[in-house]
Length: 148
Image 1 (cartoon, rainbow, N blue to C red):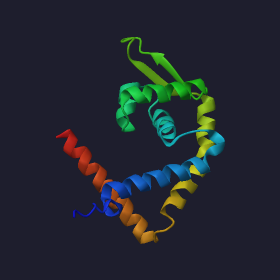
Image 2: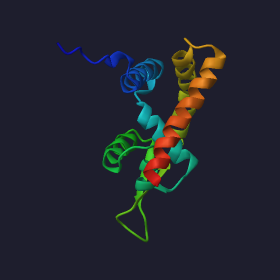
Image 3: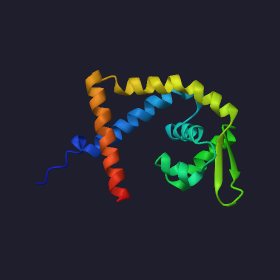
Image 4: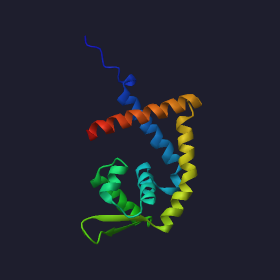
């Protein structure tokens, strides 16, 4: 008889569970803002690069361009993002965070900080630093491989 695969120890499963836990904590901490982690990442990226186009933004937050368009639409409907066609290429959409969006993001930062603290709380400070270093290397290694 073939034994089942021990998926609970597989890196992919553990990463998926860690992501589920991270999103759950994020949603608890930011429930008052009705925002998702992807929306928060998009808002911050647009704040850092005002006038960024949607395709560049999608690449920077590692999200597909088609889905990011619908996320941007939700942020626009909330009044947090302004989207305009590029004057040189009307198909290209440029983005800015509105003043209201900037205020909302400022209000979210405390909850995001608590999210990160809660997520890493089971680990010692040294383990937290080690995990962050290893996750960074894992992601960068795969991103570099795709770029080659």
